[in-house]
Amino acid sequence: MQKMNKKSVFLYEEKRTVTWFSTLFFIILIGYDIFFYYIYPSYVPGMPSGFPSLFSYVMYIFLLLLLPILFINNRKNKQYLTKYYFFFTYTTLSFIGELIAYWDKPELFSSGNAVEVFLVLFSPIFVNKRFYWTVVIGLIFKYLLLGGILANTLVAFPIVLTTVLAIIAYIILNRFQSYITALSTSYDQQMEGIVKGVIAALELKDPYTRGHSERVAKYAMVLAKELGVFANDELKSFNYACLLHDIGKVNIPDSILMKPAKLTNEEYEVIKTHPVVGEEAVKNVEGLGSSLSIIRSHHERWDGKGYPDQLKCEDIPLNARVVAIADAFDAMTSSRSYRGALPVEEAYNRIVQGQGTQFDPNLVELFKKVYPQWIDIQKES
Image 1 (tube, helix red, strand yellow):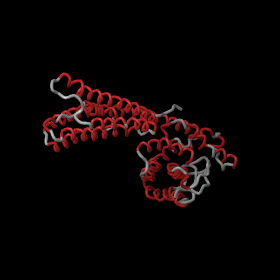
Image 2 (cartoon, rainbow, N blue to C red):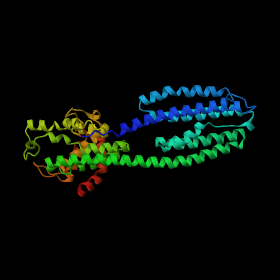
Image 3 (cartoon, helix red, strand yellow):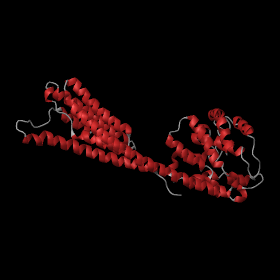
Image 4 (cartoon, helix red, strand yellow):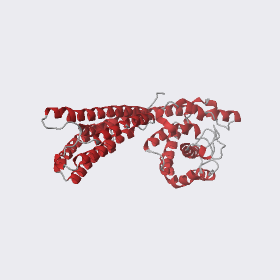
């Protein structure tokens, strides 16, 4: 099966973007200051050379100290924080520096660095509206505060310039987001298509399980959403893993899988291999993420008498505990080669009876709450 790795790709691109952003940040910041404070004054008679205050050197020291943080964040996959560190450090220190430089001579106020234009125009490259608004509002607030403290209306120019650049950047940001959304949607559709294709192949092998995987996924998604602890991306991988939870059954001989009578102990041991086989088959599908544990552990029991690892209580992954209830409910309410379907009321009672033995007691309480939704799903199938 083709290896899917959307999250890793995004992390890699974020790291590259942060590295380029940090490099350009320093090139523009240092280049502009050298030109404006050291080169340009040599061509203007009477204009003093050098920084307006010694605090500028302090600002550079603090900014250079951010470089180790850049490497640490990249190593810990927290590179998304680096851009905020750079922005807040620069904005705060430049505000303090300008306040010190022009406190007793506000009429000489001159502010800003070309790096602020860079910050606004390049904020869309992270495709993150939170960072975009942080930059825009942060810079405007900086100049409003400077203007208020120094009683100087010259701050109007950088405020207007920031606003104009922000409009341009917002248009670019929306375009970037449209592209990312299209790519993400395409990935999800491909992933879903592959999963459904695999499930269709499994159902050809075992027609009695037709629709089982889809119903289990629907039941489990209702319960998982009611639980309220899974993020949207986690719910996507959760759904894929639910659909694939029985994929290991492709390795079970037809004579056992479709046997119209009770299985022998030896045959049941063969059946019990499907969670491990299933996990092994799709372990490189990184789109499943932590939801891979669903495939391996959906037959574990709360009392530790399940398989394949005899996990007990909260040692069983939460997502697998959710799917265990959904899988059991659908298995009981569906016809099999060896028995007919049970009434939904009987399946409900058996789930409740298994509270604290087969199933997580807290999840059974939630099951009671969402049970009417499960009935609707069962009727629609």
